[in-house]
Each structure stands twice: as C-alpha cells, then as structure tokens.
Image (cartoon, rainbow, N blue to C red):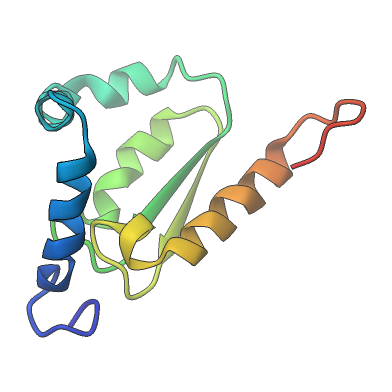
Length: 118
C-alpha cells in the first residue's frame, strides 16, 4: 500500500496528469525515448567524474532498488540512498525527504569556495 492507496501509484494519477499537462511539447516523448536508450548506462557511468547520489524508492515496482547496484558499482563515486515506503516517483511521493537527501548530499560533496553556501 503506497501513498495510502490500496493500488500502488494510483493516487498519483491526478498529479502525473497535471505534470504532463504543464510539460512542453515533446517532453514525454523525449523522456520515454531516453528510457528506451538506457541500455548502455552502466558502461557510460564509468566516465562520470562527479559524486553521484542514487535516490531510490524502497517500494519501487518499476525499477527495483537492487537494479541500481550495477550502476552504482560503475560510478566512481556513488552513494545509494533508499527512501522507505516510497515507489517510483519519490519526488512526488516524498518531496521533503528528496530535498533533504539532495541538499544533504550536495553539502557533503561540495567543494568550498569563498562566499558560497548551499
């Protein structure tokens, strides 16, 4: 039971439709096309130089958290964080926790510069 609804993800239909309505022409197509080309992501991950946070939903039925392990292993500096009770859309299901995780990670990996703050 995700999102306090007996059918996982169903409670988010309205929010998802609204996001799609607000998206520009071609955004959904571009997103789905990128997903379709995802096959070589693990091979390409080795070239990523920046620290990387993989933020996953523990209850994601589309992309199980275990599926991120090869990607994390290929990234030179990766951290996996799994949000409990969260499915495939953590930014909608748990927006506060997502912001906290991203800001916390950014603070950890930030290179200090004079006058800058996160």
